Length: 120
Image 1: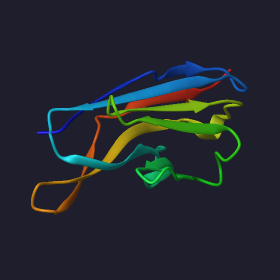
Image 2: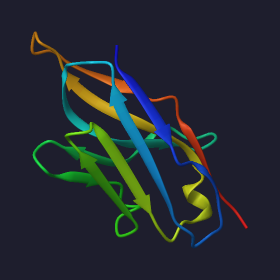
Image 3: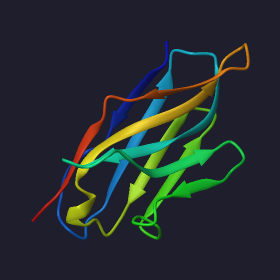
Image 4: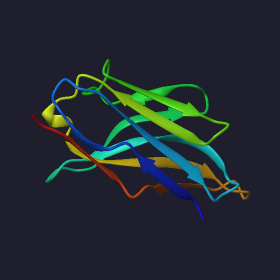
């Protein structure tokens, strides 16, 4: 069974920076994509950043220029660096991965989530 361990959340002042990390373990299935979604109170879960095995990364418009998602394929780990944080970045951030099993079937897995609060 896939296990995603997230770390790095917390309280940050507006304009500050943080780095979230997520390590995947427990499965020999191939990881195709790995990244982050977030969910603010009363809002739907939304994409933040998602890195694919082809080297491309998708970013939400709201974080472009402020976020960098780095995927370490050898360690099955992804790092989200965010700068110039705004109060509207406050949310629970969920690690996400898309995998492919030995039968060629795709499936996805979510982390437990880590709270990020941007406030003065």
